[in-house]
Length: 230
Image (tube, rainbow, N blue to C red):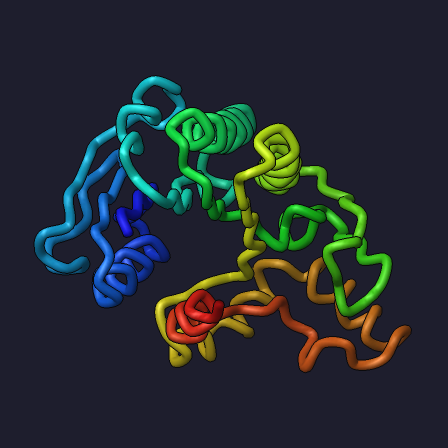
């Protein structure tokens, strides 16, 4: 298949690009910046595009069979609130609508567990554990709000274009390796004490729904293994 991947130069995207190439697909990496040298396979076409511009998005993916939309600002803390929100929401809608108008029937877009409001909230609220897709959102920051809206946009486009299949994947914290993930818990306790305290309280109230009191992290190998399942 011909697969267009936005954000293919990023930490997650470069691994998705490599997996798609290894499986024999033709891949185009669409991003604002080229990937660092040597991190993705040779021969992958790179297209520089501003994905907040609809026509640029349409032109970049036209003629492809599948769209994997990973490009986004991945956290709320390094850009102004309105930039995080508007970038993520607009690029998601452009991705979905451009795919529909190009005749692409299969779309995957990156959402986040934070769509329901989690580690970026002042005091995260979980109504029950383990969390399911039916959990209400209590988001209050621009990043989490943007991911919730991206999911709603996916639902809307799927209703309008009934022959499309759209998946919004709620990623957890993805790091490069299991070894790196194991170094994070002490840092998280220091950086996000409210989140960790709230999760510990829920575990005490509802039982050990999570194996630890820390937010879940995925190492890249586990993430790619999950993505490979049908």
